[in-house]
Length: 205
Image (tube, rainbow, N blue to C red; front, side, top):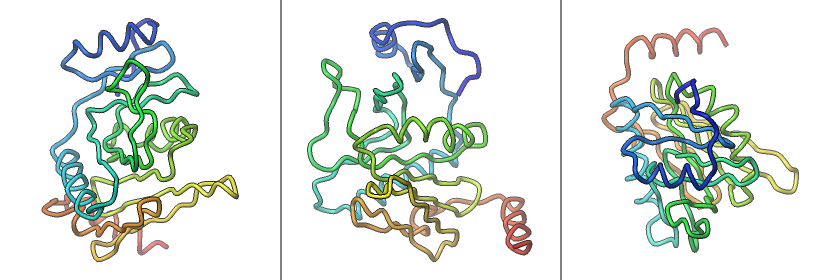
């Protein structure tokens, strides 16, 4: 995401302008931020995720949406573009804005070096205000690593589980499926440097 915002505008002005643009922009409480393009690896993994999740959902009454669909975070007055969202049951959209989803059950973000701190921090803080959200998944693009944060409503916390090997699976409890990392990372060529750093990191533990 760009570091410099444009001057403050209203939600209506943002939505009107966004529909006329080719590039994507997020809206953060009056300020608009341009989104940078994704790397080939990012796009590859996102495509694998869509294919894999759709296949495992099968005939469940769930729909997978791509990064072209905005999500409204009402509590913090934001419009954002997750890499992937899952809705089970009827999808709900903002009144008069059928391109703005308001009830994602699962949100998936593919981490990029330029956006990882945002996805882990401020973006997740905002996502947690979505009452419909039950699972937030972060997918690393430089090494095999998927982290899934699942909401525990009774305890008021988010539980973290991760999978770090291609022969492992990561559970998505809200939709009762598990994703094999081998399928999420199918045909992804990891850079040797990332593999070496992972080995050193593992040996230090």
